[in-house]
Structures are given as C-alpha cells and as structure tokens.
Image 1 (cartoon, rainbow, N blue to C red):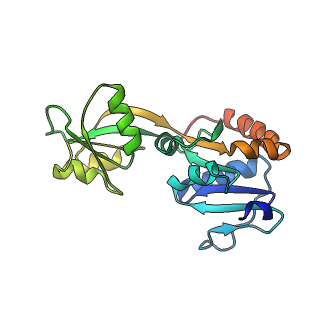
Image 2: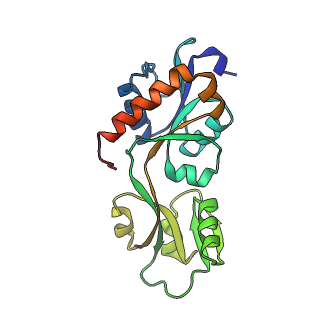
Length: 213
C-alpha cells in the first residue's frame, strides 16, 4: 500500500490530460513532485505528494478503491466507469463529446453499435427503448463503421477532423465531457484539511476560464 507513505496520492491519466491536470493542481497551490523520469509510473518522495500515472480508464478505479486520494479524468470516462467517487469540480479543460457516428451510406435502424463505451451506450439505448447488439472494441472504432462491422459507433469527438477524414458523419451528440477533479469519499473526510481548500481553489480557477479542448 502506498497511501500511508504519502500525504496525498494523485491519479493522473497519461497523455494530454496529464499535463492539463498537473497544471490545474499546481495553479491551485498543490506542491506536486517534479516529473524527473517520464518512464516512471509513480512520482514523489515519501511524506509528500505522490502522482500515479495511469491509463485514462483506470483513474476512477484507483480513486474509488482508495489507492489514490484524488484524480483528474474526463467525464466520458466517469460516465462509462460507474464508480462511486465524489466529483466536486469541473476543470473546464479537455472539452469533447460522446457522439453517435455513422457512415453516410448507412440507412435504416441501428442493429449493431461498436464502441469503447459499452456501459454508457447500453444505458443510452435502454433509456430510448432501443435494442441493438453492442460490440466492445479496444481502439479505432471508426473502422467498424467504415467496414460495416457495425451500423453505428459511439466514440469521443473533439474537432471532428478524424471523422471527416474517414468519411463518417457525427449524427448525434449523446453527452458532453470535460476534465473533472474526483475525490475518494473516505479521503474527503480523513484529509479534509488538504482537500477542502484545494477544491475551493480549483473551483475559483475553473470559473475564470471558458471551456476549451
């Protein structure tokens, strides 16, 4: 266990959201460790603040199960994960959307949907009273629409440039997403002296900016 070795454990996703999350926390006054080894997955000195560098979809799991006290992750991941975490701040960065995407030649009802977001997609279909087979893929879900593997796909869209290049059409926005600051519920009680002021500063900083991708 690492939580007893550090004052606070922060889970950040690899990639672009790592930089955005790190900057937001640093600007809110959190004394984060310097990233000295980009290949390392755990950053920080014992007694201080640690950063866990995780795959995007793993962040809510680590926070929910108490390995990390807090984390930064996109709302699209939270919608899919269903994890019981406290979500006090919309950081208003990393804006994107979860959309239904089809090939222009696709007509008629949707019988099969390919996606990385199987739980979210199943929930949307249930709410609309629709029945379709959901094919869960690990990557490049657009290819499912191009090849005819599925009648439609549900995926994250930012600018839409990738879809246009693939000759696909975004037919409906199902949910909007920005980066969220999430907190383990037990940590919120046990480490409130650190977390309460941090949450307030994050909220204040987020309100000063417009959402951007």
